[in-house]
Length: 117
Image (cartoon, rainbow, N blue to C red; front, side):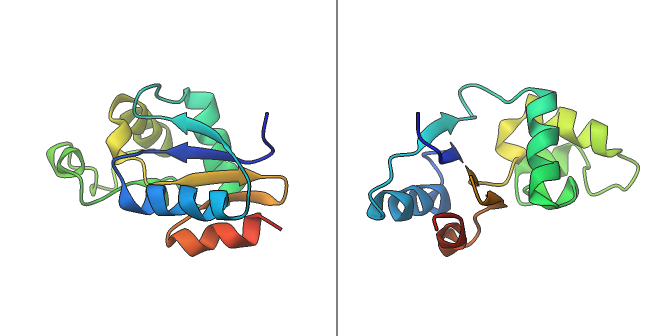
C-alpha cells in the first residue's frame, strides 16, 4: 500500500497530469477512481475537512448537473451539497491527493509537488 492516495478521474486532464507528476517522482499511488466507486458521505466530509476548504470549493460549477440542480443557490447546506456530490460524482473537483504531509485539491497539477516531500 502506498503512502500517497489520489482520488482520480481518468477522463480529466488535470487528474491525469497530477498522476503523471506523482509517478515522475517514482511513486506509485493508491488510485481511487471515485467515478466508478463514489465516496461515502463520511469519507467525502473527512477529505473536505482535511483540505481546509469549504464544501462549495469542491464543487465543479461548470458541470451540467450544477446548473440543472441550481447548486449556485445558497439555500443548499454543506450536508446537502455533499449528498449531491455523492449522487453525481462528476460534481466533485479533482484530483484530491492525500499524503503523509497533507491533503490537497491539486489544481493546478503542480500543487501535488508540495505533498511529495
